Structures are given as structure tokens and as C-alpha cells.
Amino acid sequence: MKRKVSFARVADAARASAEVIVQRWLPDGRREGREWVAINPTRSDGKKGSFKINLKTGCWSDFATGSAGGDIVSLAAYLFNLKQGEAAIRVAAMLGIDPYE
Image 1 (spheres, rainbow, N blue to C red):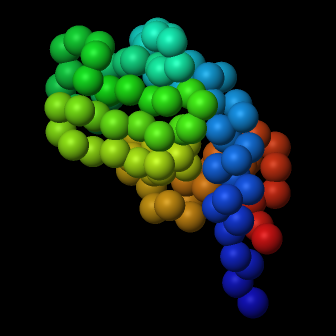
Image 2: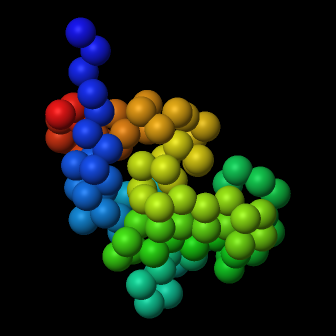
């Protein structure tokens, strides 16, 4: 029987550690208020400003392309070209939590 990924639990845990996570994934970025502003590594991006992650909510957006998501799990899927389930499992492993319900 296939176990079900607990997206909500993983997303909640990731949101609590959002600043540490984005510093690891996007080390060229900087904090501006409640946001992490970085260069988008998935495209040819020359300057910071259009790719932002809200550190309180986990919501992120690339304002230059319209790509966006609602949590750190979807950010992982976007940055590392993963399916949502794979991203949740990898984020959970990074945080040391069980990704399953």
C-alpha cells in the first residue's frame, strides 16, 4: 500500500525554517523585510528583484515570468525540477521529519 505524503505538515515545517532553507538554495539572495530576494537560477536572470520568497508564508513568485507558488515545497519542485511529491519528500528529509501521514 502506497503511503500518502503529508504536504501540509511538510509545508508547515518548511515555512518555520524558510529563511534557513532559502539561504541554502539561493545563497546569492538577501533579506528585504519579510522577503528573500534572489536571482532565479532556473533562467537567465541578471539581477535581483524579480524573484522573491515571502519568509512568513512561503509564497514565492518570479515577477518576470509569472511563475509562482504557495509554499516552500512548490519552490523546491520549481527550483529542482521535481514533482510535488518528490519535492515534499526531499524537503522533509532535509528537515528531518517524516513526510508521510
